[in-house]
Structures are given as structure tokens and as C-alpha cells.
Image (tube, rainbow, N blue to C red):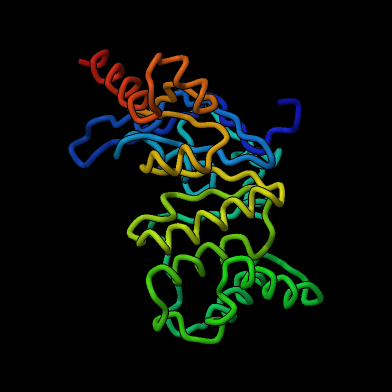
Length: 254
């Protein structure tokens, strides 16, 4: 690809000590790139380093070494610019229960510096994008789990960021609610945004992602299109390719 890189992770590492004083290498020398207008999927088992990588990109955590750029801004030297250009939804993101979806989006649009002249139009467009309009004035604590997740996703992008990071956005949702979120992800892609999607679900990786990175033991084991990963591993399915890559790493570590 010749287009500018929306995300560029450069030898990023994050190490810390556990309560017993042991060194934990959560991420080690991770390198990956993602481009505007694509969905880049991050696949890996629990504890592989996916969430740590995403939190470093979102400037929630500071890397031990290496760095990354989001929308051209370095996470170490220009964290405020990174946050202005980033929408971030983690698995633990919550909502203010007494606010309505409309009030939630107004609040976060204002926090992200959206000018008053644009705010209402942007809020209305985002409610429509995520099919929340009919529930826009109902308190969040009266919404279904799936609707709450749509509101959380809308909140993450109401300021129109160029890069969107989603950490398991359909976790715990039923198939219909998951489909609604997946449709919204594809619509965000169509607007030219770069979507970095962490998921455990192989069907999402196949249906949504243009390229994938497989991560295990804090390392990026492989990246490429689904077809390229199949060719690299000589496996017939993405699921088998994933296990092939991860199991190779486990065997090498023993």
C-alpha cells in the first residue's frame, strides 16, 4: 500500500513486574502497520498482549521501549494529538447510566472539542449511524446490553476521529446485536477510517478484516491478508492458521 499509515507500531515493548517481583513481558518488540480505509484485526489468546498494545496506542500506558504513531503523531511526544485523532472502545468501557444516548454524545463531543456549530449535526448523524435514534432520549440504564454497546461505540467516534481502536466490541452480545456492531464497523471503514479490531472470533476476522496480525506471548507472529496467512502457514482455514502460529510459539518457548 502507498497510502499514508494510519497506525505504525515500531518495536514497541511493555514490561512490568507482577506482585511477586517477576518481570512480565506483556509486549515485546511489536511492529505492525494499518492504513486508512481498512479494518486491521488483532488476533491472539488471552494474555497474548493485545489489550496492552491497544492501551499503549491509546496513550493509556507508556511503552517501556519503542513507540508508535497514530494518524502521524507519536504516542510518546504528541499524546494529546493522538487522543484528538483517536476513538477508543475497550471491553470495560461503561456509560453514565442517568444520561441518555443523546446527552452522552453531546457530552463527549464537547469534551473532544467539537465546535457548537457542528455538534448537533454530528450527534444526530452518529445516532443514525449506529441505529440509536429511536432510543436517543431513553436513559442508558434502561437500554439493552446490545444497545448500550452501540451507544458506547457511538461515543467513541462522535468527534469523527481518523483512527478507531475497538477491543472486543461484541463480547457478550447476542448474534443480532453483534451484527449491528459489525455493520457499523464496516460503515466506519467506508468513510475512510482505519479500524484496529481486537477479536477472538474467527468469523469476524474473515468477514470484517482486510489484514490481520496474530499476536502471541507479546510478539507479533505474522501479519497479512487472510489469504496471505493461509499461504504462509499452509493451512486450509484461518482458524487452523491461527493455531499453527500460536502453537509454534508455545513449542519454541518450552
